[in-house]
Length: 348
Image (cartoon, rainbow, N blue to C red; front, side, top):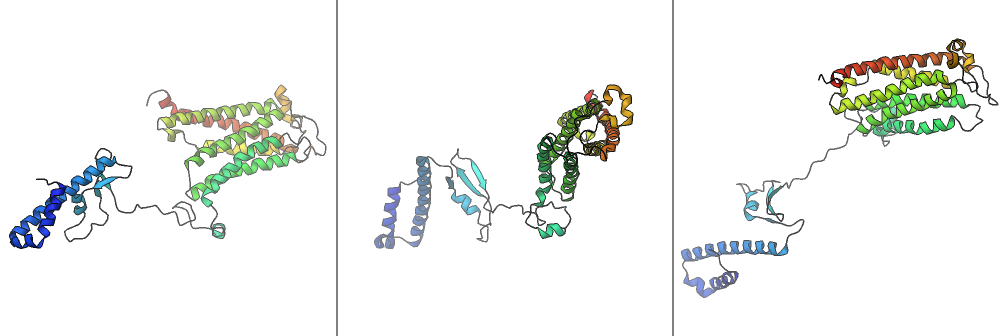
């Protein structure tokens, strides 16, 4: 039975008066007090519910039930220490569980930002403990990307640049070394990232392709043909890996030993060919005269101040290494396509 709030207030005043309290026996007074307590409890709940409905609720409003509040006290009268409170949300009255315990956070690595499997810091990491060493592999990849437009610009400008050949060769060699070094550091320090795994091979292919195109423009078809083979293979294998990854079989076309040999041969051959001074043509290589039209090119104009001998002998060996790289490119590419053949032909 529910009592109006005015009636409850009146009964409360009446029962608290000295006259009325002396007219009741202890038993009668106890029963009256119990009824008053129950009525007050129901009245408060109804008032709270009505207030909640009239307010319309807000993002953070909720009514905590007395029974739920009491349920977090255990038999010994001790708070359960962070157990969930049942709350009636203003969004449709659904029961929610909100943990009172503080959220746990994952602490950062104690090894200066590197991964948990990284070896102890060496002298350089101890000397510069605040340096973001875990970002160094990505920084090297960024530097390799930035070197591409620099390499391209220095290949043609300034027009008169006596030391162009060694500068371009050194720039490409450093970029090639960072291609190996950033991967080595990422694995050693256990800081591999999805973005780094994506950007590293892209930067490698862009740098090699840019250098090959520049050299093909200098020496003509004898460099353009292996360049086309290498670039076609890179596009085809990259597309194959993406297609296989969509089917969850990327591991069957992961980089193998032949691919690493191809990359090493290509980078070494380009580095040596870039060392050949300007103005040295294919006529300096004895065996190119048997290639007909392919054996003509690279004569150019002798730039003032450039000595067109000395390292000119490197042109022949670098061309042979480029041909070997193109051959390994074809064989390694065929290995990837052979491994993916069952999926390509629908047999798996």
